[in-house]
Length: 287
Ligand SMILES: Nc1nc2c(c(=O)[nH]1)N[C@@H](CN(C=O)c1ccc(C(=O)N[C@@H](CCC(=O)O)C(=O)O)cc1)CN2
Image (cartoon, rainbow, N blue to C red; front, side, top):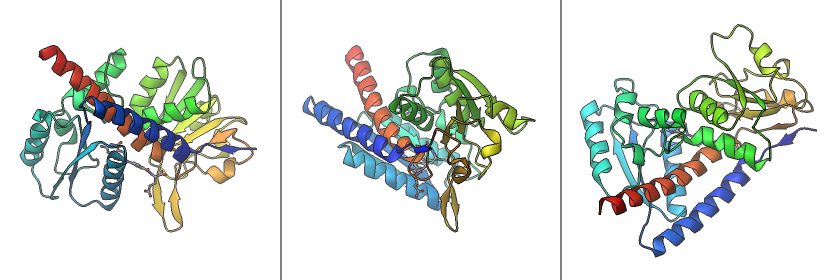
C-alpha cells in the first residue's frame, strides 16, 4: 500500500500556527509585512503571487505588492527593490520568478537585503545556508523537509537522492539535507545512470522540470518519493514523477497538486515571520 502525503493538510496546520504567532506579535506592536514583486504577465506567476498575497492576508500580515510591466528595465525593478529594502514596514521582499528574459534575475535578487530575503535566494543567503549560519532558507526545499518531518521520516543517516540541480530547489535542498545528516546523492542532466542513483536511495526528491521523468524503473520498493514538479497538461496538473505507476511500490509519495506546492506558500509565511523578528532584533540593537 502506498500512502499519499497530504501536503495541503500539513501546510494548513503551519499557516494556522503562523497566524497565531502573528496575532501574538501584533499585540506587542509588530505586524510582519511581505512585499511581492511581479514583473510582466506570466499567467502562472500571476496565480502564484495571488495565492501568496491571499495567504499573507489570511495570516494577518501586511501585503505590499508591486506590479511592473513586462518591458520594465533593470533600473526600474532595482528602484522598486531598493525602496522596499529601505521601508521599515516591509519585513520581507519576494521577486517572483521567472523574470522576463531581458532581466538579470540574480543581479536583481542580490539587491534584497539578507534579512528581508524571504525566498532565501540571494548569494548571501546561499552562503549562510552552506555555512550553517543564520539566514532565511528557500521555501520549497524547507517545505520538503517539513513534509518529511511531519511524516516522521528520519533524515540522519538516510540515503537521499536529489534529482535536479536548480538554484530554487536542488542545490539548497542538498545543503539542507546535508545539514540534517542525510547522505545525499545528486543526479542531474549529465548523470549517465539515473536509476543507479535513485535505486540506492531511501528517499527520492525529484525537481527537474521534466514531466514524468521518474517511474518504477528508478526506485526500489518501500521508497519515499517527493515530487516537486508541476506541469499544466490538458488533463490537469502533473509532476516529474509517474506517480500512478509507483502505487504499491513506494511506501509514501507526494501528489501533484496538493503535495509540495502548498508547502512553498506555508514556508513563505514562516520566513516572513522570521524576517520580521530578525528585523526587529536589528532595530533593537541599533537603538
Ligand atoms: N520567487 C519565487 N519564484 C518562484 C518560486 C519561489 O519559491 N519563489 N517557486 C515557483 C512557483 N511557486 C511559487 O512561487 C509555487 C508553485 C506552486 C504552488 C502551489 O501551491 N501549487 C499547487 C497547485 C496550484 C496550481 O497551479 O493550480 C499544488 O502543487 O498543489 C505554489 C507556489 C516558481 N517561482
